[in-house]
Image: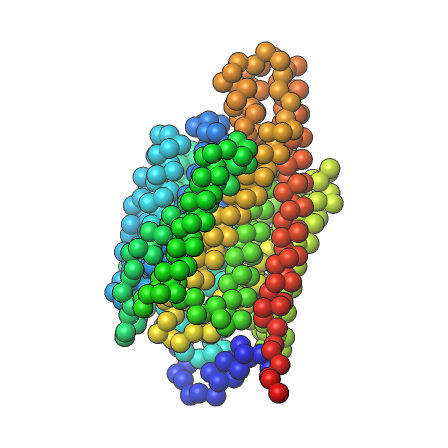
Length: 514
């Protein structure tokens, strides 16, 4: 029997109160910010074509619009988890929800790409207050192990469903409104939470909270931001002083961060948790499941709208089956894991993600809407199952009073997956596009730069050219984009297979010595 199974057996053998109607109503309320944050991670994917045509950002700026939000989230989640342990998880949740709603409304009216990036960064700051609080509050609401597993399955299902529903919500909104309206959807999600949290969700704190180490927070941000910047710069401009310098700065800050965590009494990231193999393997699974989902949505949303010519609503509705399957898979995994080792469920989910990308690779020359729907459905089942069980394993592996810190680690893995899913796969896609697109002769310098950066930019330029040149540029740009989709998917398949092996090795049961 694995260590995780031992933990569950121990929990079941201890008499603990079972959750009632109030706790389940509290779970429903906690799903609102979970849905919002996960929707916000991907809703922007379907607004990218409209933003690209309206604000005309470069490919690097376009990636920053997507990445700055989860980047700030990832850098602050563990700190906010610890802060919630200290000041109260419900209190921090309400502060974050209020701030997130206000800044989202401001982002809807950003006049430039640069202002949109700033607004997204501030949204990430308040979003970091929300996510660890929701997961750690589940630990206090549901003391019974089986009820907690089911509650976490619902939580993970909402997370995966929100990520999948983001494009659908974006499609519905963009069908009738300006792209800025995708940010206004935060308000109806957050108003019920602010109004009812005090009644349905009890306050929860760590009786002996750690002091937050601000130096560690700064080092974590100084690690992530330069590394993401280096990925974008090196893939865009090739090897140069700026990209290499950012890479070295990120690696140095990361080494200093890890060294500090091992030496101080109040580490921001408790590295000793990673000595427990199920915890480490589950964090890795969290990271890679979201890496695959967000990276997939980044290029599929553009393929459906800009290559196949679907309107945002039709493109979003094509992904609805995947969203439903993700929820079903998460709920089913909560029951399957009672008879199947958690390790096998997680590994199976990651392998299904690889199959989804593999389908894109095999049929990249004829990437129809039906192929996209099938591939996304397979990937969504894998992500839903892997996310549910990995989050359950992470929480069941730590003492209850450290639930906030563990939730912060879990969500950091999630947001890092979101950052690197777009940063790595998006940068590879952009580099492949730039290398393959053929521009018509006689384009002005500005038009050539715009058409050579992104598919949206090329289509915008094509609209101002004579018919023959417009047709040539459009066909070349679409072919170059789909060529990049094929390259990106091949890399994703390799990464998923490596991840499945890593999770299998890290979570397999250890034979007792002697």
